[in-house]
Structures are given as C-alpha cells and as structure tokens.
Length: 261
Image (cartoon, rainbow, N blue to C red; front, side):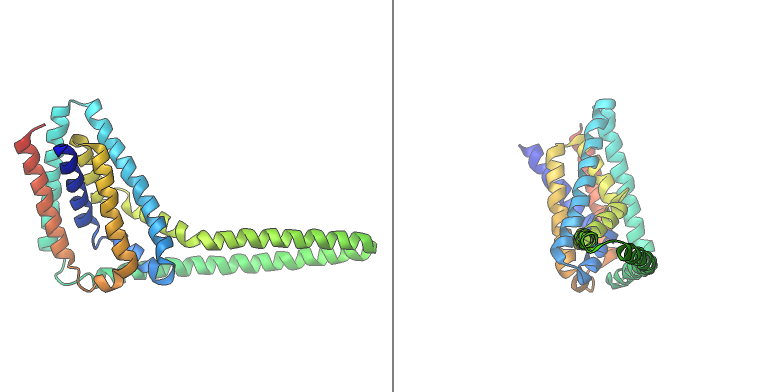
C-alpha cells in the first residue's frame, strides 16, 4: 500500500512540474482561446492518456526483459542525468522572467501553421467550386434532354447528395478542433521529458499507480492551460519550474539508490 501511494505521488508531482509551462501546456492554452475549452481539453487528454499508457507499458516491460536490479539502478542513473540536464537548462540556458515570451513563440508557430492550412483550404474550395460549376452544367444539359419525370428524379437525388455532403462537412468542422488538439499534443509529447520520466517511474514502481498519478497530473496542467493559460503565463517562471523539476529528479535518483530495488 505504501508503495502504491508513493508511486502515485511521485508520478503526479513529476508530471505537474514537467508539464507546467511546457510546450504542450501553451498549445492547449492557445487553442482554447479560439475554440471550446472543453473540446481542446478532451483532445489533449486523449493524446496524453495514450502517450502515458504507452510509457507505462514500456516501463512495465523493461524489468521483465532485464534483471530488475540493473533496471532499477539504470533508472536511478537516468533520473540523475535528467535532473542534471534540467538544472543546467534552468541555471544557464533559460532566461529569467515569466513564460509570456514562450507563450508568444508557440502562438506565432501555431498562427503560421494555421495560415498555411487556410491557404490550402481556400485553394481546395476554389477547385471544388470550379468542379461544381462543371458538374452543374453537365446536369443542366442532361436535364434538357430528359422529360419532366426524369428531371424531378434527378433533382431529388441532387438534393439528397447535397444534404449528405453538408452533414459530413458539419461533422468534420465540429471535430476539427478536437483533432487538432489531439495531433499537436501527441507530437509535442512524443519523447518529452515527462514521457521519459513516466517510463522510468514505471520501471521500478507500481505501473497502475504511476499511470493514474500521471493522468491526474496531466489533467491538472491541461485544465489550467485550457481555462487560464494566458493569464498564468504572466506569472509562471520557466526557470524556476525547470530547476524545481531538476531537484525533484535528483530526489528520485537519491531515493531510489538509498531504498534499493
């Protein structure tokens, strides 16, 4: 029971300090500014849940492939390296101040990609319009050659096709923000430090507790991003968050060495 509680809190604190002010945090915050917050939250959490499950499975499999003792101390060594890297970034690479600059950088990247997608969409619409005009002329020519009964049947079929097309288009538009949040979050999370930390924690802790702790940590950070990310970016210090994460990883490494496998 003690190991389950310890695994839960270790994963929750690790995810919280890794994700707060991270790129995925700002992606959710920026997308929520122009879309429904709960849809962005759902899309982001689906991606994060999938990535977390994958990380926990990898962490669970590793001790079965290798000797648990070596896996344990290898995880401790990686936590130590991870902590050292985070401290170095926090002390020497990240500028002091709040996270507003990083927020603006991520926003600029998303705006740039959105403009590209808009231009592609406009070109597709123009092409579809030209195609539609040609089809309309063909239908008009055929209708002049058919009798009134055939014309009514053709018109009915065209109306049904139009309704189906608009219904499908409505579904795509309705879910577009969800798909965008899911895709961007999954790509940003792949190989991220929080995912690596989840693998390491699952290697020598209860993977179920690590999974649920990570999910709750992701839920807190993503919820904060979706419902107040722009406001929080003025007060979050990337340097302090990174340094705190490095200290936490050091604590995991030392605790693992002291307690043993």
